[in-house]
Image (tube, rainbow, N blue to C red; front, side, top):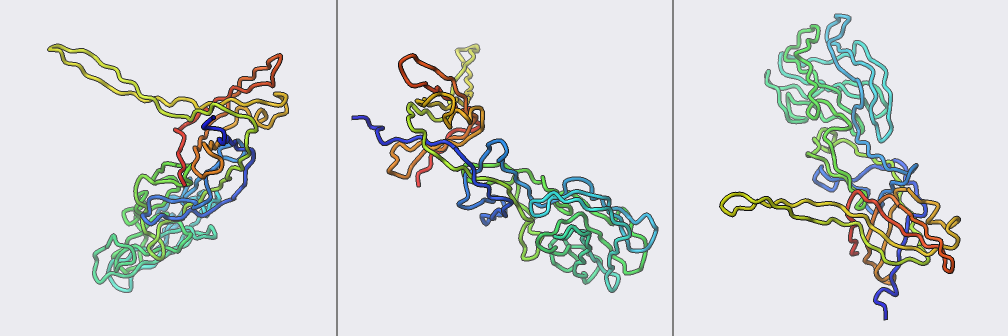
Amino acid sequence: MSLNKNAQLKFEAGQNPRGITAMTDSGDMLTFNTAALKPWSKKSGFEYSVTPDGVATGGNVSPGVSGSNDVVDVTALTCYLAGVLTSVSAGADKAVTRAATDVACINSITINSSGVITVVKGTDSADATFSETRAAAGGPPLIPVGSIELAQVRMASNTAAAVTAAEIYAVVGTHREKYDFPGWEENPADGEITFDSVLPQSHTGAIPKGVFNDFSTPIFAPISIAGDYKPSSNSHSVSSEPYYNNKTLGSVSTSLGQGSFIAKLNDGVTDAIVKVKNENLWFQFFPNKNKSPYWLDQGILGIDLDFGATDHPTANCTISAENEATRVEV
């Protein structure tokens, strides 16, 4: 009796567009996910797109060229706001507010959730000392949720004067939010991304900037007659070099091998699996279709057709993946 008589192989036959979705912070301000909405499709026309809030181009803040007191200029920019690439016109003579006395005060130059240049004033310090702590006296303010910080203006005098370049701070990741900083790794199988470093808690409620994903999830359909599934997997090899005194130094290299399976077809022309040849698709393999554990594989589908004279056409299929197949045990 075959141990695999209840096995079943499914392929990504369709897609369910989820639209732009706010990703959820896992609690460490480092890993964000789309919860149960996974995996993410990579089929052409349905590829996912992760876009954290932040500046894409432009948006430089400088002293007002008009020479007026307590103003800055902002160049035109594009930014991602709630997953949408938004264009913002340049702004001239944007007013900043000084402290009531000669003490430290920080103004954040932002783009609000409506795409408008907005200045947010921090709390005055008790002296001329600036703080790096958000919402602290003399520190930068917590900016509204959905806003993007372009720069900070730091002033320690309440005497009206032209803002100087030395008073403007725009270090990416500290005073300025870029959509592509910090970088991140994507895990479409688990529906999550992990940033290279923790996102600053710079928004109201001490939360990080918004992270969004415009994506689709696959709709799976069984391949009627399939067999010989092999998951995409790593293989390892060892090489060594001899040295004097009978010394040997070894090194290990890893390569990712293609997944594969065969399928019996109806006519080799109108079959659903044939129509998606060369597409980047997800595949599910259930060792027992009556139980929940399965393998999840994603890659470009290659098909080598064999039209026998006395048999149904055969599709010898390969899965050219970017990552190893994933075991899903729940």
